[in-house]
Image: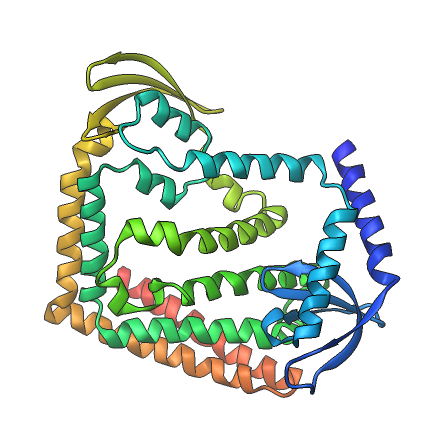
Length: 373
């Protein structure tokens, strides 16, 4: 109850602040100019509240220098004037703890390893990478490179192109999507918030090596997780927090909720009790090179890597290339159906395009289901 009251008080104070000061905002072209109150910054967009009460989202990159400076100043003032709630402070502390725990360094003990796992809330690829010994990282690097080589350039570029187009759609047609009659009135703001935080995730992907087939053919996990992954992780966390507020069984259900307790150590073998709210089990860890990993993972590693490599190599066969051709055709059709949505000048035109896309997606689902049977 106290948290709820604190949140309501924060929202009330914040609404008073943003409704009492209207500012002038302009874009780099000089064609966009609006009088609106600053609401906040979400991802890479500024939220502004117009005189009619409607909240709009403007990409920061489209604002002129004066408006960007104004947004920065108001954002800093808002953060300075409002004390964080206990929940926000707690999450900030946990995020800091996870960040510091993400590096095991050289020759960690079993206690160091369990400490990292116990401080991990969600399945984090960076932490998983840090837990791997050097030779296992090499296996993953080779697997990613093989995937990039096995996937032909046409298919790779088609997928990236589709992601770019979806990013444009969410950015340019946010009001059309939210304004659709297919979106219930009670869910419109939720949908808007999801669109706002999805854009930065897609942009982070498109700005990384994940969008470049050539770069992925020489993938280096050490470099990726140090230089590119932090921004992607930041955007994914913001997206997950928004989704979790609307659907508690979403990302929150993927939490790593085991507590690891060391029972005994005998040379390069350790026994660990893993306890969760619903179960308890005993696990054996083994030391390999300079890392400690669950024995079950170690026993399966070679077999799983071999199976994954064979599956990727199969993509280079005649049957694999035929499958790629089918994927390209489907992506091309979906991409083409997004064009009317991007070009729509009215809500009616947008709805017509959305209906055609929905029918085609249902057709694809039915076709896929039939082929699997």
